[in-house]
Image (tube, rainbow over the protein chains, first blue to last red):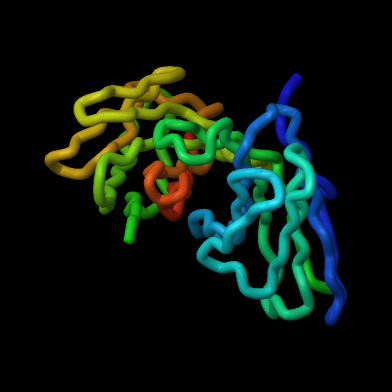
Length: 115
Length: 113
C-alpha cells in the first residue's frame, strides 16, 4: 500500500545534540512538508519542498534543517539551536504542490522529547 | 495572511447527539477548505473537503458547506458515535500561496456511551 512512513515513532534528544527525523513516501508525490504540532494547537509549517533539490522555509524554520536529495525522502534535522524541540512532528505530501484542491497525506508522526 | 478559527474545545457529547464544530476563515482569493481528523498518536486524515463556494463535502455521516458570504465551513453530524472521538482540524489551502495549508487549532471531541 502507498503511504508515508515516519521513523522513529519516539525520539529523545540530549542537550546540544542534533537529531534527524525520517520521512519516506512511495506515493510518487512531488511536494513534501514538515509540520510541528504542540498540545492544543494547530499545525505549524517548518519547511516544505515542491521538487527535488529545492526547499523553502515555512513559518517556524529557525533551529531546523532539511534536505530533498530524492523525491521519496525528506528528512528533518532538529539542531541544537532549537531551544524548545519537544513536540509531535508530522510529515505530509501532496501530488502536485501548487494545486489548491489537493489534500495532504500525513505520516503517523514522531514524538520528540528532550532528556 | 491566511487564518482559520475553530470553535474551542473540548466538546463532550452523548452518543447519538447532534454535532456542530464551527470554523471560519480569512483568506484572499478562492481557497479550498478541508476538515481533517486525528486519532490519538496518529497523523491527520482527510475527512472531507469543498473546493468552491456552496459546495458541500460529506463523508461517514459528516457534512460541511463552503459558505463564502460568511467565510465559514462548519462541520456537522446528525448522530455521533463513540468511535467519532478524535481531534478535528479545519484547514484551508491556496495554490497561489505556494501550496501551503493553514490549520485551525483543532477541536477535541469526546463521545460518551
